[in-house]
Length: 412
Ligand SMILES: Cc1cc2nc3c(=O)[nH]c(=O)nc-3n(C[C@H](O)[C@H](O)[C@H](O)COP(=O)(O)OP(=O)(O)OC[C@H]3O[C@@H](n4cnc5c(N)ncnc54)[C@H](O)[C@@H]3O)c2cc1C
Image 1 (cartoon, rainbow, N blue to C red):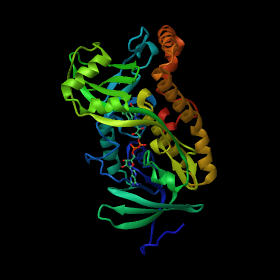
Image 2 (cartoon, rainbow, N blue to C red):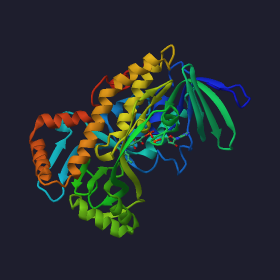
Image 3 (cartoon, rainbow, N blue to C red):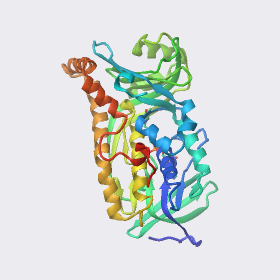
Image 4 (cartoon, helix red, strand yellow):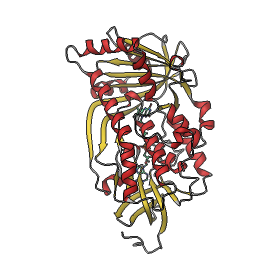
């Protein structure tokens, strides 16, 4: 480890988190009560319009995520901007299958809560600003990383271009899909392109939402229409790259007409649309979630298609379980401890990745017979209480130990 090569004595931390997006900021907050020196380095100010993690996208938070946010003390701040999902309606365009699920019938208050990323980011950073044990470097970018068995050295560049090297016993990669830390730790990342792009936009329709989340599968990709606390809807339209280029070039009226043709008239006529944003869709999986003095969490560890709304929920469970492993450990970067964390997360990570990838493939298949099978699947699902109960559990995680925060406990 080569710390201090820029002259000044390096600052030493127990944990350095690279990336203060949704997942990194959540981890920093989860460690705020622990007797640990924590450094959070984020390249873009949380309230900047260019902040890539906190844009106008909506996120559907599952019930485990709500409980984790309650444990982090931010739920009360978020709740006014969160729309509960009280029912889910799944349909297949041009086919007969449809399934309906009511939260009440599954004895849960809601399947989840829809909030914009901007609201989640703002609440997390408000709380972080008063977390005494967390040092915040923002806007500042990590430009180089060296890991060695005794610790990590991280070069941090502030907004004025000044560089400083800090050391940490554990380096956490929460720096998203293009993770610099993952590359520096020598961990491979396998990427499968879906050839799809998600277009997001808030819309207003004739009928204000009644808490139903709609997922409509179409031959080109799924369209999700989610309730917002404003009474309007957050839409996510996944489609082919060519179609996305066409849809993004349309004016608002033409875009609304195209969305209407794809989604149907369940909530009346679409009247207004906000700014559109687009995201290329892929499945990315790091070959390992831990390395020498390094842990990968959130999108640095895995990036998913948004069809099942699982990416952030999974990343938040990464952060919550990691926090409880390292909050009180004598050495937070100890290899045995990191291996234990990785094993504990494997079932949930593998389950969510398989579930999401299968959903994308089954519902975008044009093979003869597959559409009949999926329609039958939807009808059987509609008739089958155990299948509905299983889906209701999706919002709680896919296996392995449930993080203490998600059980209403403190991290240690
Ligand atoms: C259209 C769409 C809809 C989605 N809907 C849902 C949903 O309903 N439910 C759900 O659970 N998930 C959803 N997701 C997934 C979710 O948005 C992501 O899983 C989540 O944003 C990942 O957060 P992250 O913090 O891991 O990474 P990111 O959001 O990529 O954040 C990484 C952060 O690291 C910073 N950074 C990067 N490099 C450096 C560096 N070198 N130095 C300093 N800082 C750095 C960046 O500025 C950024 O703030 C959706 C995704 C998309 C695209």
